[in-house]
Length: 353
Image 1: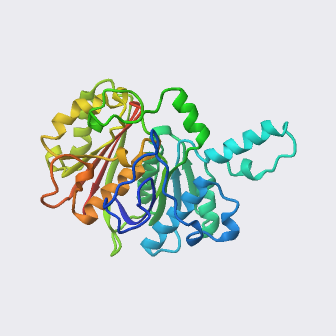
Image 2 (image 1 turned 180 degrees about the horizontal axis):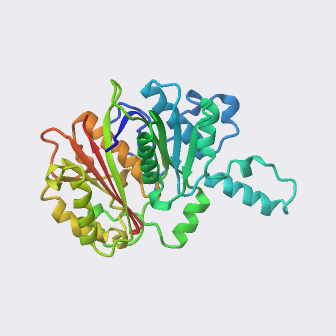
Image 3 (image 1 turned 90 degrees about the vertical axis):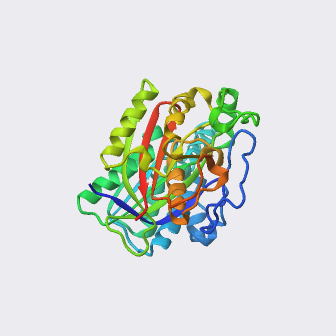
């Protein structure tokens, strides 16, 4: 079975992940009921003449892709595959507001051109002068998982180096509309995040890119062994059954998993199935969570993959993300068990090389 080796990572998130040496020394709290990404000084990553025309999602995507490529020490890739749920939402909103405010006249094309979901991937390709395969997946909660699956199929076809990433942004208007629809909440402090009894999520945003290769090299940090998606499982037993089958394909059981990263979102309606299988998993594996750091968004699993890679690289499980278990012993296998709105479930297996 084809594997994917992670040789470089670039992560812009609500935490200080832009600093490659950061490992949960300090935690940035949400802005009430949502998270804002901690954005760097983009002039360090993007040429000023390009920067002034870019929206936030494009800036985050190009900068994080730049970091991944730089860390992997490669100059070109055979493919660029991106995933996003909302795309360049800020530019879409800007164009539509200009349409309304200017009575459909005297409109500049920049926001319209940059409002499409594939803008980030195409901008990266233009900067890298990459004329190879370039694809963007807009599959809601499966957007980033689709990138991973595509990359692994491309490796099977003979590609050697691939850049993949997940990008998401929100705007003040988007936050306010969701707040009025009662989709957000300030997470109560009297109940553990993973045992939420109330409805509502904390929206997040960010961009995480990975430089992948078909074969390991001296830059390889971890190995992605497989990924599987599951749509609208009826019961928690369905999830557990599919999970055991997934692990068996890699000659593993839950007992072989050192850390399971579970995608609890703080919404009791969406988390209920994960809450039901948690007691079974914690008997076999340490359990950690991550959306209290990143927030919930379509491609939050890309942040989880960054985290899984870091756990393997550092060989430690920080207390700030631990639900049960400890960091004693080596971390060889990390399983990401994510869910998005109780509809899209996915398994991603990351292993030490």
